[in-house]
Length: 224
Image (cartoon, rainbow, N blue to C red; front, side):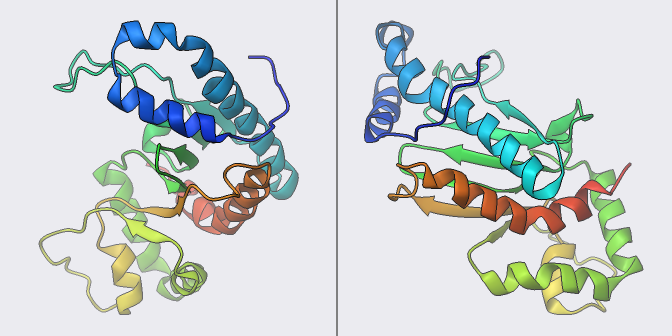
C-alpha cells in the first residue's frame, strides 16, 4: 500500500466506529466505504508505517507492521456481524510468520479508547514453561527488568493466572505476579484524548514502545 503522511485521526473517525457498532451490516458499510477509507484505513496504515520508521530509528529494530482487516472472519463464530468496530496494528519481528504466538508490540483503537502494549495473542504452554525456566535461571535479573513497569503503574499486566499453585513459590511477590500467569501482556489504556486526535500520537506511541522494549526483548529471546 502506498505510504501517505500521517495527519492524525479525527473526531469523525470516532463517529464512524460508533456507526459501525450500531449499523453492522453490509449494505450500510458499502454505502459508507469512502468514510472507512478516508477516516480509518488510510490514516491507520500511515500511522503504522510512521511508527515502523520511528521504532527502527530509536531502537535499531525493523519490526514489521500488520494492520487488521475491517472484515471479521465469521465462518466459525457465533457473532455474525461482518465488521469490526475497532482496528489494531501489530509490530512483529521481521522473520516471524506465526506472529500470533510470538511477542509483538501493538496499538489498538476503539470507539471509546485506545491502547498499546507488548505481548502475544496466544502463548503456547511450552513457551510459558520456557519463560518460567528463564526466570528461574536469574530471578534477580527478572526483578530488575520488571521494576520500572511496576513502578510506572500506568501499565496493566494482562493474562489469566493458574488456579493451582505452582510448585516454585520461593520468589518475591512482585516476581510471582508475572511468573504465575498462563499468558503475559503489558497494556496501557487511554481515553480518546487530545493526543489521539493529533500527530502527537506518533511521539506518544514511540516513547511508550521504547519503554516496553526491554520486556519485548526479554520475551523475544525465548524460543521453543
